[in-house]
Image (tube, rainbow, N blue to C red; front, side):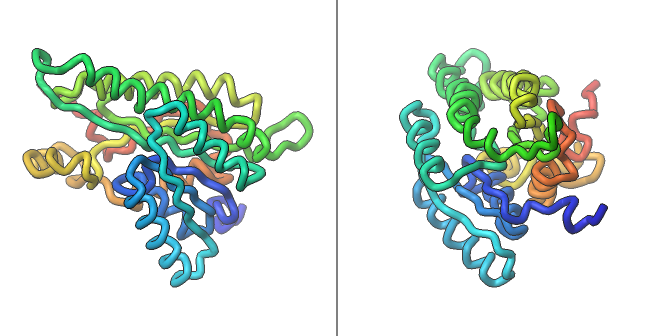
Length: 272
């Protein structure tokens, strides 16, 4: 039970959606610096290309053996999901890890939340997770390692959820929290459906991390968020990267259908 092999992702092929910035960039960095081949995809081609270039430079300096490839795609669109899946399938015989991180939020009071917010968020945050999983399942099935009837090293689905799906949010983000709650349950449903096919499905319910999406919240409520945390801080890149590396490695091979609160305990605190 060697720690160097137990937590290794070296040589694994990974797709991180929304991998060019924010939490996705943190996750991509964790995989590349630990020897994985990472495909980075999101709507912003500049973010994808920049992340891939900088991560390849980092991999070269650290001699990790990892690499990054940019494949920009607007994952809110069905045809773009199909194109992404087709392009990866043309390049790779198997896909070991799919990290569903692409997402969008919408904060507004109840009375002014538009109908369009629901369409936008439910499509990207929830529906396209199913779409892309469905398209890439054949490639992930090929990555599963079996010994007889037992699946000893499955492919992995890792869903980036939110603590706003575990509790009623402090801020008004009705469509976002509902979409993430749906994601959490979809992940459990996929765990049952895809487990026998050699694919596990788990969720990280993330608390506050430094990202563009959270920047306005940190600007206005940063100190309060830190005070809310039992650990007195928000998340770091190593926190989310480490959780993903655990789930993607042999150490996490028996975890399936779990929702892990990655929030330092913030979601445990109740407001009186």
